[in-house]
Image 1 (tube, helix red, strand yellow):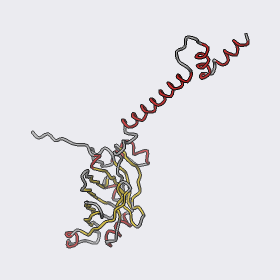
Image 2 (cartoon, rainbow, N blue to C red; image 1 turned 90 degrees about the horizontal axis):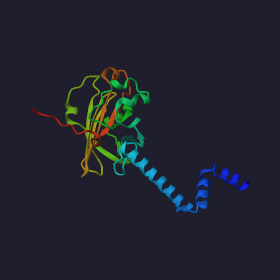
Image 3 (tube, rainbow, N blue to C red; image 1 turned 120 degrees about the vertical axis):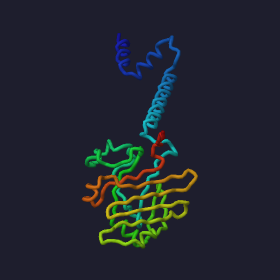
Image 4 (tube, one colour; image 1 turned 45 degrees about the vertical axis):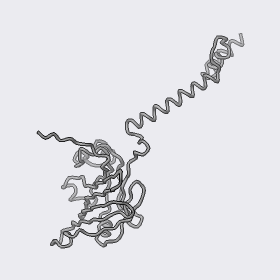
Length: 235
C-alpha cells in the first residue's frame, strides 16, 4: 500500500513519471536515456525553427546580408545622431517620438532606412574649411579627399545663400561622393565602385514648413540594396 502511494506521488513529477513508467513497464521499447535524447532532438529542432522564422520575417539578418550603416565623423566624433535603425516604413516611427510620421517624405521604393539628424553647424564648418572628415561604412572608416564644386565657387551669392556642393572620394577604395548642404539640410550620395558596388543616399524627409523651423530636421540614410526594383510600363 505504501509503495503504491509513493509511486502515485512520484508520478506527479513529469520527469520522474517518465522514468518510472520506462523502468516499471516491461513492454517499454525505449530506455530513459533514449527518451531524454529524443527530447533534446525536439529542443534543437524547435530552436532551428525559431531561428529560421526570425530570418524569414526579417528580425534576424542572414550572414553576409547585414546592413552597412553609414556614419560621418569629424575628429572621431560623429556628426550624426541615429534615431532609428533599419526601419521598413514610416508606420512605426511614432514609437520614436517622431511627430506626424505620415507627413514624412520617404520614397515608397525604399524598404529599409535609418532615421537620423545632423550636427549641421559642425559639418558645414569643416566642409567649408576643407578640413578632413571621415566616412564610416559597415564599421570601417575611410578618410576623405574633397573640394568645393567649381560652379559653386564662381556663382554669385546672396547673404542668406548657404547652399554649397562638394565632390570627393574615400581614400583606399574606388569611390566617389557628392554632398550638397544647406543651413540645416544635406543631400548626399556615396558610391562604392566595387564588384558588389553599393550606393548610399542621404536625404531630408520633413515637409518644408517643418524644415524651416527646425535646426536639425529629420533625414534618412538608405542603401541601393534596400530599394525595390520598379518596372514602368510604356504603352
